Amino acid sequence: QVQLVESGGGLVQPGGSLRLSCAASGFTFSLYVMSWYRQAPGKERELVATITNASGSTNYADSVNGRFTISRDNAKKTVYLQMNSLKPEDTAVYYCKTTYYGRHYWGQGTQVTVSS
Image (spheres, rainbow, N blue to C red):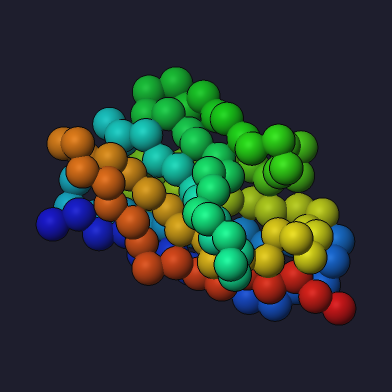
């Protein structure tokens, strides 16, 4: 079965960095688009970044463009989100997602808190 497991969240000061990881299993990882989403308290879940399967093309939300970088290692079946210059408004639970045979699969999420 498809499983996604995020890790790497934590507490960081404004201006700091974190790298999130999402380990995938149960499907042919290299063939599928992977995305990172986030959900802050009281807000809707929003798309942060996407990376395609073949070319590895990336897209970012305007709010993180230039600060966050999504990447993937198909051999390790892992997608990453490098987050730099973090701001308090980046505080949220971060989720990775894929769509497999028309069904969306989500990880359990990892908490990122940006605070001094």
